[in-house]
Length: 271
Image: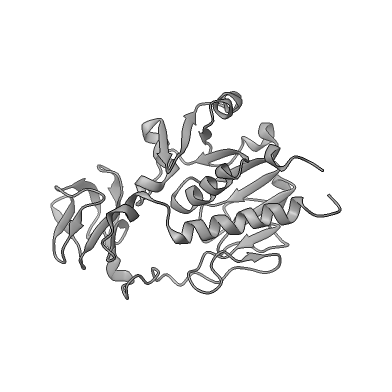
């Protein structure tokens, strides 16, 4: 029987949900590598490994991702007990890494090139993938009874375009850019309590206001160019500051689905 802790898992994406997946797999002992785009725009930056692209390293609840420049640095990062992250949108690192598992965690609502031929096991998160087709397995990402469910056939539920309900609020939780321009902060930061109608930030000279009372669970990075209607922040009406700095229930559930898929596949009797 193969030592499952020696499995190499390549996670495509390093945003909030990808981080939840990577954190769970890292804690389970797998050897991970993450790939990202050159200028990620995560909103929940305090729980997104993609911040390492800007900062060099990003730690989330005891697990640290470290930015590397080339695949030859992967082994050294593993030896240091960290997770290597490479700016590599097309995932070319797979040619040298030869992963046992690839997880597409971009959550683009469509497949951006991931193929079931990339590894013995390829898992896609959410809509845009077909289990048994372009990927081997799919994990449901829509909130509700099936969140985190592992699908061996078929597709996840279609994207509703409506944010998940928290304390009865959906779209009201989301901060959106009022116009095109550069995003800039006011005095507010992630973790701060805001009231309805408070100014949180600006796009150019146009204010971005909170619609409800809660804590700022996320804000995109300052000076990022945005377009009108783009999500730039998130207000959590539960108003618990610690939620801003810890992995969400949704991300953990999805991570559990991925872990189940890996164990299901590599614990088969015919393996």
